[in-house]
Length: 384
Ligand code: GLA
Image (tube, rainbow, N blue to C red; front, side, top):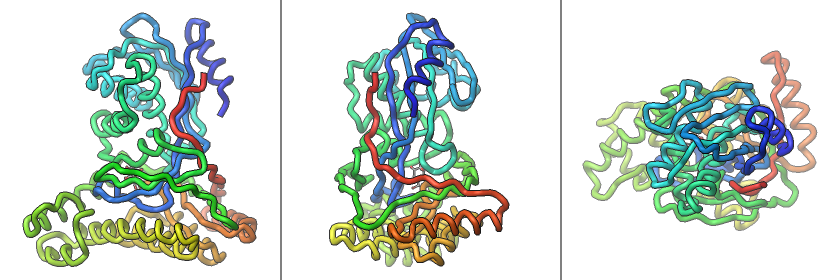
């Protein structure tokens, strides 16, 4: 990402002066998908791609924002009724409002931003944007009084209240808390987390982007969440203290089979199994057992495709190609409905896999997938 480029655009589209510059990354997730809003575990890490924003208070009550990538300029006020129409600007507006709700006296500012985390690839470009602004506003207007978890929650609340996606906390957490070379296991119920240095000897992590744009905001994501809540409500009638699917076993789910729809049952089954898979992967990683890690990744793909139904033809195809090539682990990453597969590949297989995946994908779908090597990097920070 190019700081100088952002700076030059900030100067050009505002009053010629410079401001402060902040960055926040996108993320990968090794395993633990759709578990965050079920109180389960996730295993993300921040990447070396994300958003860079430049920002400077302007002494007015207006935010003057320029999206460098979209070449679009929008101005908006900071009251609830001032929500801008452009969806990219709503993210910034939402973050301002959520910071104000937490007692930060946000005033007008000039800003410009750009990103290199691919949009809609399941790498959380929106969380990167939210975290960058939450971090910056805390620094510029809040004396850094809001703690890092609350900053992540500001991004999540922005999604809930201003975008309409009832997401979990994983993406914003990863963007704010990322650490170079480490994945993080987060318990989304207690919010306890642990850094796991991740340097698999002899393996590489690579993302293959189907370039199918996922529409997370489409009701499909919220519908999955509703299914999980339906299953929990039925189980909670029989078992005291059950709050999330995290608190449920497959046996408990079986007890309510007749009371919930077949679809809700299948969704909940996937989640309960997936929560266990994260723990199994952590154990395997501690033993350096990458074969088990990989096997669990394939199991996740199968669950996301057949039970949670958030995969698509292109992603299933990429997963099959990985399997045929002997790739250790592969699965759809993030919310699904498009985006990337994440692949754990032995060094010696890397070239063959990438070439084969590109060729076969092109043959079938008439276009090339994109390939991103994963570099695990730091979270939100001030650059200048
Ligand atoms: C999206 C959401 C996250 C999480 C993942 C699926 O990225 O924003 O909260 O639910 O999907 O694991």
